[in-house]
Amino acid sequence: MSTSEHFENKTTPPQGGTDTSTAAADSKPSTAHDVTSRDVKIASWICFFAWTFAVYDFVLFGNLLPQLAASLGWSEAHSTEVNTWVTAGTALMAFAIGPLTDKIGRRKGILVAVAGAALASLLTATVGWVYGIAAGLGLVFLVVVRSIAGLGYAEQAINAAYLNEMFAHRYSDPAKARRRGLIYSLVQSGWPVGSVLAASSVYLLFPIGGWELCFAVAALPAVFILWAGRWLKESPQFRRRQEVDELRRAGHADEARERAVAYGISSEKQSSPITAVFRGKSLRPTLVIGSAFLLNWVGVLAFSILGTSLLTAESGKNISFDNALTILIVSNATAFLGYLFHGWLGDRIGRRNTIGLAWIVCSMCFFAMLQAPDGNYPLIVALYSAGLFFLIGPFSALLFFTGESFPVHTRATGSSLINASGQVGAIIGGVLITATLSAGQSWETATLWWGCLPILAAGLLVFAAPNVDPRTVRTD
Image (cartoon, rainbow, N blue to C red):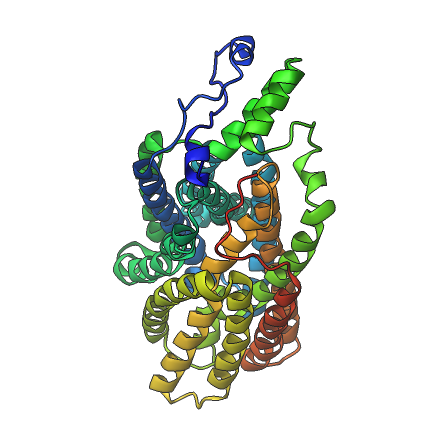
């Protein structure tokens, strides 16, 4: 029996009011909840749009931070300090959604993340009004609201866990398995697409209603995603793990073992996902990939999230705000191609190798950009675009690589923990950049030390992670 035939004869856990004892009585797996190729395609499209609109809101805050700071009378140092507190809240939310998703399922986790991001966008539009009542209250309100927006950022970790499992079910043949990275890169490319939408919306909406209107409009796409969520099906791997656990908890140990053997998973009681990610074979990817992710995000903060601040500051590249937005649109369009390229390359030379090599080249591109003369606009555009190509593009390989590195029991938790470590890196980067600017140093100096060097270190460190053959499919 081929691997794909083996999977087509698996079952999934009983739903809602199904009697567990009835399921236990029939130990032969059914195919009632297997997913089809059409289900996987629908899931991929929904995850793409969900991630795109989550990024739209997430990046919008960074793009509009200079305008929001000017409106509320903040200095450059104070605005980066506020962003650091927001990032801390984002990290907490990004991690919290992982264990929840391992408990309630990938489908519900995606919908929770979408709804949370939409709520945050809508409430951000009211920050100016709250700030007008009391500056201190408005500041706390902003931090809390933008922390909730961390659910949108967490979406990529949930998507990675979910699609990793869906792809394993439908693309189990080795020849097809080698296309999974490219397919996933199309979903993860929602980052540059969302970034372009954010920059474009600023062009269109900011002159009409200011930053408030931009955030209010950002909440609208969530209605479409929540409506489309009815067509999302839970992943077979999660349901099979859930079914075995339910049988075991109901006292049907023999039936649980039979199902577990048929599914190729363990029937033993599992430790909590939070504990399990720091044990056994999960420990090394947790520490290595998490640390590399953290270091890389110090650079992401400097060059992507705070990109407009770097480009427009007098001590940065001293480019007008409108021209800076043009650079963001062009460079993020280039980053879209970066996602496809690194997804394709990861299917061939391995995702770990792709990530490491790309980040090393990225650090070189941004270093060259910082050395470029401020008046050389074409050169700055070219180097900034190349930097984002090798900075953002590898995330299509990184998120899928993260999903491959953990079993189904801890996949969402492990992915979310690593994903949240990126926000910890952004916190560290925010503190370091704020301290550097407060000490009177330039944006160019700050981003050299706390952008280029951490990205280079991340590229070198990721080679210490366990490699995964892109032709293999993890089914546990």
